[in-house]
Length: 124
Image (cartoon, rainbow, N blue to C red):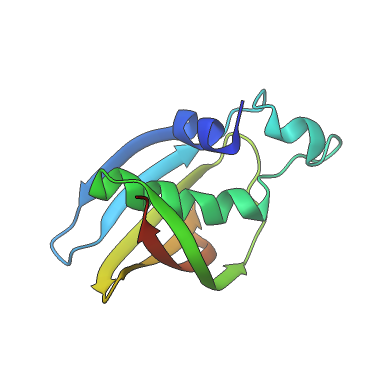
């Protein structure tokens, strides 16, 4: 199973648009997800790279288009995300020249869990 497969399987809702143009998606990784076997077996948590990738997958879901990350302009993690927690992704997208700017705020139970900003380019 790839990282993308795990993230796709973990999506439980969304995208749900809001009046301000934000898209809301929610993800939940089950304890049996293979990711947790290596990260970390005695205290499993969702790897930071998965949280970054969730922002890209969310953008692809909203736009129905495949993207590649050109640049990670911000990746800030405020708390660990553990199995069976619901991660809410609030995603704002903005087109700029030849890139798509993705700004994702991550939260768990209403508490901030992180923030990711990506510059994405469409896959050919």
